Length: 490
Image (tube, rainbow, N blue to C red; front, side):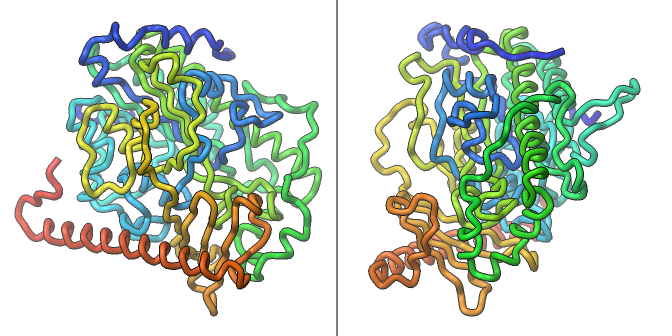
């Protein structure tokens, strides 16, 4: 185990609710300003695969309970749609175009990581921990200065043999280590524990059992017939340009969803893995209660990108549709008064908002170069007339079968351009008239002015984040030339 420097369970509604009965007026000033933070990041889960989001089949009672006693952001999105880049954005508070990291790119610089949320919380006196899928590679091994407890896991394989000879699923191991971290926390020391589940990412090399679930949830959903994907009409797939028809989204469709038998088996396995994460989350929440942390621990639950699950004839993520962009985001703060709980917020929330929110919760200054916004005003029910109404989104990984693109997702219109196609291929969707994005309006003369406006907005945001990347690069190069690099001080 790396330490730097230093049975079945379903949660009942009453467990979380009991922790929330302590009114804010009874908490000390220090308690109000220095909460513990538990950040749960789940892989490949889109926004609608939770019971609290209205899914008719999947069972997630623990997460549903957190939502019922917290705030669920029904318009939560990621700014880029693959685990490496999305996780780098969450760590650094920056767009992919600014931190410039994804698969196949140079390592994240120590300068950037010195301003990551765990580094800043650690510097502010928090005990910081990380468990699970790290997902990024860094220059200069900064993790000892970021984390007091660092336990990254590979998912391959999900089932791992333990020193005592037992076999444990990676999701269960993450829960075991989370409980170990909580039990070892010094009295009075605030903590931020980040648990990044490998689930529910498929074992891409295993075509027969890509979603191996924990034994505790085996058999769930066996007697249920999973409905076909809602957007499974073959005409929807055929309406795509050829470069998307031949993309990895389509190739992986044949791995998992192309026959009724495979679809039934793998969807049930996928649901079981989500329920397995829910169950382990229940174990962790129960331990928070056992240790007396419940009334002062903020819990954040989020996905790292969406997932197609056969919709549009696709698998994976990576493209501009809602199934790729949307993720679950729930924030449970036990200190909030009752009238500010069980809230569904409809403002646009982004993955890069989460680190800013964690710093805001901890009373730590948010770096001015960060590009997200704290969600605290929304959690507290404040008026936010100037809140964003659109956001930039992009996928920049070099892969011959994943077309690069950039665009803007607004409250009504979605614009995307696949800029390496010859000629550039554009999409324009009107979410009000066509919420399923089945019609491309880019060539419709009636939408010419909208298209021009969205193009201009995309250029504006692209230039903004590219200039920020250039400033970051210059600052890092300057820091490397001095004996004691200021940008690398912690």
